[in-house]
Image (cartoon, rainbow, N blue to C red; front, side, top):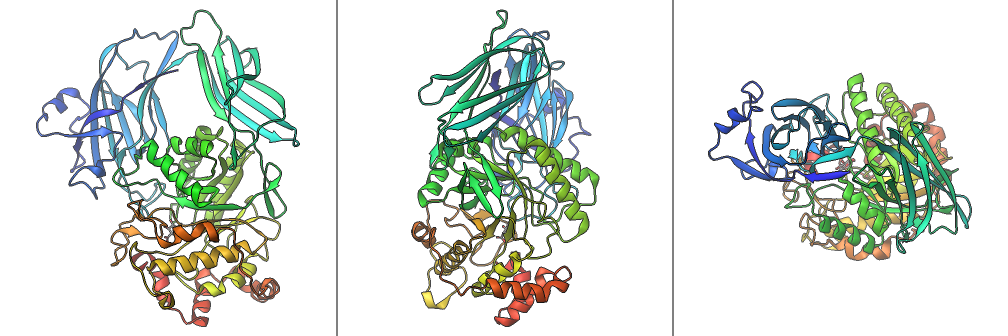
Length: 610
Ligand code: GCB
């Protein structure tokens, strides 16, 4: 495979009236007439980083010329244009011919350009809009910034017509001394190839063989003695590569990737990595780093993950959508487990089959992209949707089946905010809960009892506390006793209390703090927020560490000596059972709030107030 980068300077035009298509802005001469005072963008880069367009939600046209000088050889090669990410809808023309369009801001897409690519000068036009739509994923309302435009790499790709595709490497840990490596692939065309497994450090060949593509589905199955297993503390990587050995082909290396030998499993209510019990201690991360928007330089991502690791975390949740693949690559190398997710979030149009198809396509694309990354251990098919409604539960269950069908070697789940009325928990590999006791509602002192109560009907599954947190404005310090919201002390107290409570409950196999860095959110506008969700443990300036950061290394493994609320939790469950599917989480928290004399109204207006 050859890759020619189409990154670099592109010209762009905001289409304020949304009439570009009608005016034929994909025709080179029409655009040439507009050649004064044009804006430029160094793609990949969001148009929201242009001065004057910081909050723009609309249409932007991007175009550039590029040279392609090799002879175009249709019989041996396939030519494609690949976008790693453009938000939200992208329509693409090459040499004035429409190639197609793509919906969804976080997954890669490509177009075949054999018929349109020319030798010499070529002209590419991309219309991207980030207008929110009811049938979109996410839909109209979400708690992150709607960065628009082409914000990940654009490449022209030249592929051999005869090639191997869909390579999946699965590993199983059979015993301390033995592991199984199972590789499956598809092939196009008939040819012979050599495959090799290399030890990444020694660059020595661990296994190799020769195969011919006589059927479209191929398999390689191996047993490796004394494998160096992959885990957060030992991120050992091997390489798999495929070399074309037909003499007439110019490019020899057909495929190369790293992989790790590891196995993630659930048994009863525990989670295991390589047959050892695993406790996830993690933090969520949005793909945003100012002033770069989502186009985060590699070194900055590396720095983030090294900091996360240095604090003592062993996992991250790439909320609420797939991040650039380079982040996953770094996690493989530094040793962090990853929970991946698609942006099925809050209120989408769950009744629509088109929305389902779009979600399924996102999931399939994500699984295909990241299937060989050892750091990725789970696919989450959504976050905090109205899961107590049957149509939403069905939507999620269908997505879970779909994920399992494409990858049965990882955990499949959905991230829930319902304490009791989640109709999908029984189906998921892991039971999850997002809840903000002590921040939006309730009191953190209620947490232990509520968790034991919530867990009663789902005892044969590991639980993960997928979100909890408190906002804090960097630099706003207060007296410890005052417990003032948005102070660094309040955040420290709440996170400390919650982590210690979860650590003391055996049925929890992990927790994730919401969130690593403060992130832009246009709904959050009180005097502390100023346009940001402030639950980060570092501020949006990254180098500003909040108080919690200094204490976390000590807190991560601590347990709280609690009054055992297990029995009380079961009793409460039995009493509340007849009502449990009728009473919504809100009503229950209202009752709790009355008990602890908190202001519930502030909780339901959570976005604007907190
Ligand atoms: C949640 C959401 C997350 C929000 C967070 C908050 O439950 O999953 O997207 O940003 O709460 O800060 O309210």
